[in-house]
Image 1 (spheres, rainbow, N blue to C red):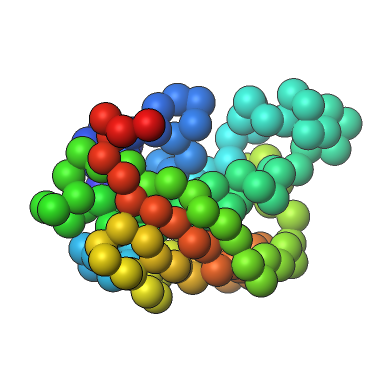
Image 2 (cartoon, rainbow, N blue to C red; image 1 turned 135 degrees about the vertical axis):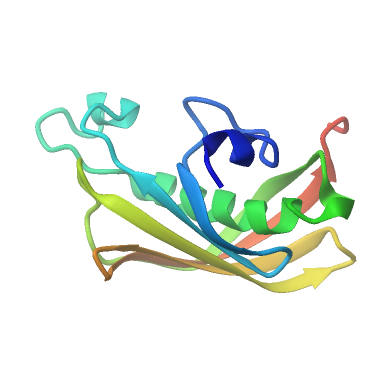
Length: 145
């Protein structure tokens, strides 16, 4: 999937759509995406100007968006939103720097009532683990507050 196809599934838009393409998908089960970290990525202006490094919280968001693609690609979830509920066992092992391409793999490990679930995500750069986490999420209709 390219960016336009991802935007048909996810409600995120620039500058907060944090995946560039989906390279593998098993609807409702798992997805693998990529994000190229451009030299001029918006977060480098402040994190950190003299030592640009991708914030860990954005790596978590990339993993969450990857999992959301897997879940929201199901016909029964069309038009819904995946909300972040929490993250456990988060580990950062490698800095993600300008020019890196991050491979994001998120597998849905539990789903209750079609609305609350968990996923396991791993972000890598050139085969090196950069971040891993267990993510909790909720699926809701986009017209509910």
